Image (cartoon, rainbow, N blue to C red; front, side, top):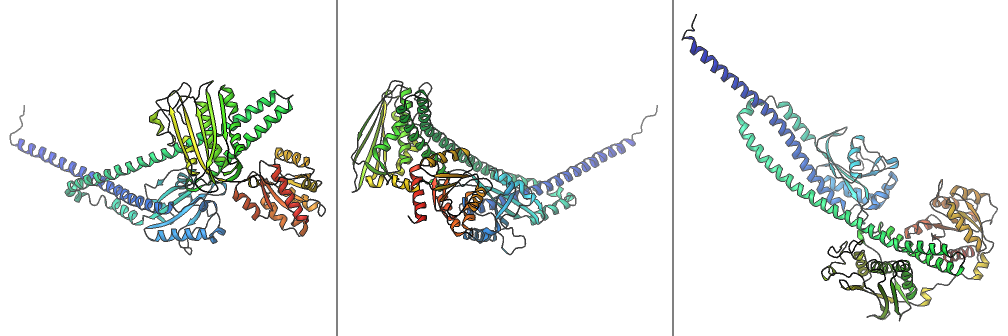
Length: 639
């Protein structure tokens, strides 16, 4: 057996340690190199993140500066290159251009969905002479469409990486533009693009040199770790701040959504009251078909309830056009007792269903007053409906109308007190009952959720009418709500306009009306009502048919055109403009009256601007329509 010599042992030990040292050294260099490369990559990401954060901060500041100036009109009235001449476009474009030039923003513009749903530019904040300036109606570049679509869906989006476009490397941010009128409609988007060419070159340089500086990285690894630690700590602090801001934004959005949902719920409650009356009286009429007097009575009540429901629906639609949550009070001269009774009629069916005792007292000193009938009815119906809802079957409800002189000459105070023997309201909750969307949790009845539905709306309306409302209540005994509204005193002459008389009816008898109406049901009703008044009616199904019938007719064949607005092929506005351009001056001058469901003031103004002579809103009040026909036809003929 050969034994290893002792002199070889140190050599082996040296080689082993040399190998270990070399291995560990290579391993250390390897890991340090990997760490250095990874650290450089991390630095690349941090550079990008820091640039993105700066750009987000800059974008948010620009957004805050602009958002308050953007209105619904900026998105609805600016659509094509021809709109650039408007003062509205010039003012906002100049402002965007000025704001863009104050910082590193490269592009600043508004956009929305255009025809066919494709995103289009509206107002570009570039200099008008810039070669890449985008006119209103220009389609967005494909790479920017996803960001705009996200904004149009209600999301604020910031690009988290550098976007490579045909015009360079950029950061982009898109914000939804929300309507400030309480509807929360998404009108369009505000987009901001910031140049990131320097950041892009910096990151590329880091990526290229990552392997070249691996050796030097081993010497400064500890320093980089310390720097990274403090930088990460700072980043986390920023993220925490951003998270808090996001949570606050989310809470605000949740509150806004809750307010919207509750508003719609309350409005549906108000609509159901007249609708319930209509359905109830319709059922009663069906059960008394052989009793004309009762049917006539029920029809009158259905008509009253229908008018009230129409007023409420108009009110809801008007909310969508009111900016800054401003509700405008529109006072009209009304008969005090008649206006009060119209509210009582709408709850009679509900009272009968619960077999409740109902007492009404009236102390009317001023039979005619000026008041906003829609809002006054909403106030009374809200309180009455709640009284019925929270009063048990067989309970008692009373409603007292009283008037007294006002503090100023020509004014009076109209007071309505509604008392019930219902479940009552706790003393603690009485101080919160008029807060928006408040409900009493400590007092519930089987099948009833909360109390005071709609009281927030009632309080707001009373305040707008410069009135007061107070509540007195005790749990288990019932409640009394007292509303006091200051009203201008009116007169019978101001309240009841001169009716359309028989002499005028005889004057119109035999006159020929051209009715432009695409809806068969509306046409049938209109023809029947007009024929009963002695008028001759011929129908055109759309604007084009109306033009053809007028052109082919003999001169002075038609005395007037009743023009619907929303019709296929050609609408009422276009048809009217075309008629006014007829070479036959007599036909071109024929009286045209809009008869449409577009019932707002701006709709009437648009009808007149298109060349129409007057405007009557649907559903049609025959007294109003016949008065307008008399005025237009007789005026045109010089009678």
